[in-house]
Image (tube, rainbow, N blue to C red):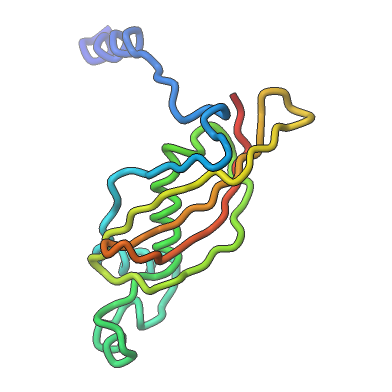
Length: 163
């Protein structure tokens, strides 16, 4: 066995798995989670996301067009705003189970390139499963804000979580 194989084997033997994500017990009705430090959206994020998802609206890709429509610059594609805010919640809310769905998603104000998004989520409901012991469907309302603390997006989301 070579040195590289020995190093890999040593690492695997010494590795300790960390228990990640909150358990069902952490989701009491009304509890609010303030998610991590936030995320600034840059022009590259917006251009790449818009191109890869074939969202060719000139508001997302053409600064002069966006200005002619009354915006200060390119608008960030709303689905990128949604995905960014949703992604910031995963570590706190949904590492322990599959996604059930989103409802009541509202885009309340445009997000612009170089805006910084932060978010918080409040537990709306926790319903224990009757058929699967130790599991529950948890529902949260998530709100996303820009750097001026202006509410730009909100949605309700559920996940099926296991202990």
